[in-house]
Length: 159
Image (cartoon, rainbow, N blue to C red; front, side, top):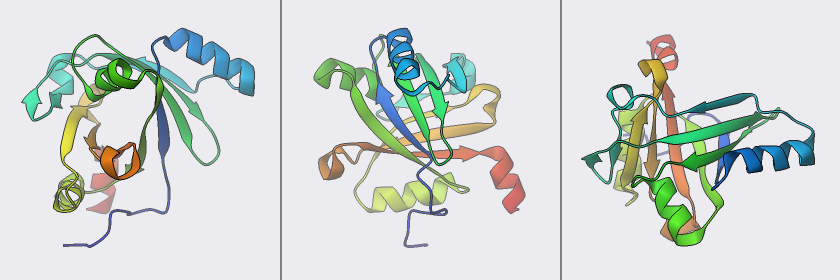
């Protein structure tokens, strides 16, 4: 097994949990002068195929992405149902949640992270099933979660 996490020397994204997406977007737009590059939300449950803490879950959210030359900043407002986002909002309030890396082999990277004692705590598919995310609990080690992002187009280009 490959003994590293990174396939690219890039942190793809930083995510902040918010209890009011519109308010956060307005504040950040005013602060930076940037408009969101993307505003979206959760996929339908049959598309998302979400899991939370190893169990099938229906998880809703809304998000806004701000793209910078070197990284995306994401603001995410969770729905009311249990999720790692809702847990953080309930326990700690708004704030930094995770940083993301791209992978071309989710299974291999999941096995690697789990071998390091970082369990996968949430999974979901993107709209159109063209990709997926998985969160790994690294809060005890660094106060934040590691997210892996995988797009089908990347897997096909590696084949």
